[in-house]
Length: 275
Image (cartoon, rainbow, N blue to C red; front, top):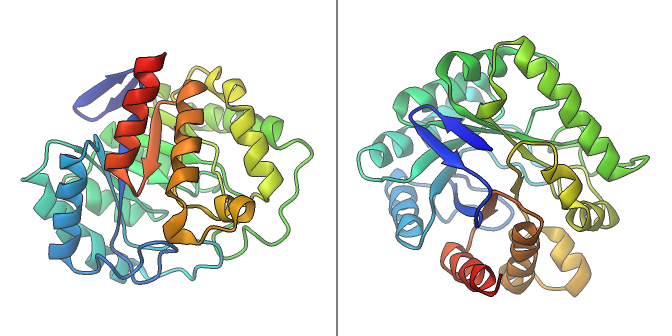
């Protein structure tokens, strides 16, 4: 499989590449408020690159459960200056984590080459048209509802089959709107409209999704299901995050999205050497 992102091509399978999280927000569940200024966000992003991040994922709107949306103006104000400054300083690929096509468009103009879209469940095609026109990479996340509502008693007939069916349906729509599937990475959306048992079932059955002939991204870093299992608070969830990152690698995952880049890179290096 290949993944086409504007001017770069990744070939899979191999050891997962690491996407470092850069939240330019006051209210993200783990690091909200740490990197609110352009300078602190850029510095943090460059540090993550030095630790081994191949992708830097810049987000200006929290997507934690129950999060309230921010305005387009505010989100642009947060992310565009960071991307503009980063674009001239990093060799890592820059990703924009947004649900808004207008923000994605501005981010691509500023230097991003990937759209990380948790709202792939939308019924409106503007984001897909943008991806088709720009040949940007497109990471599509499965989610029930939206961040404000997604954890309100989510239910599935069979979560693994339901997520798989969602992606197959979406792939047909994306190609109808001119996207190449070589642009697309699939993210099963751990924690996005999922109870503990749903998250565990998805992680256990990842091989089923890696057979869909598209690269798979997995984001479990510091998420609440780890706390549900271990009673660990957010800042103490690194061991569980590493365990689930190695599980993603074992299943053939292509990308792991993490807060703790140095530790994840080391864990994956050891996992790869063993295998």
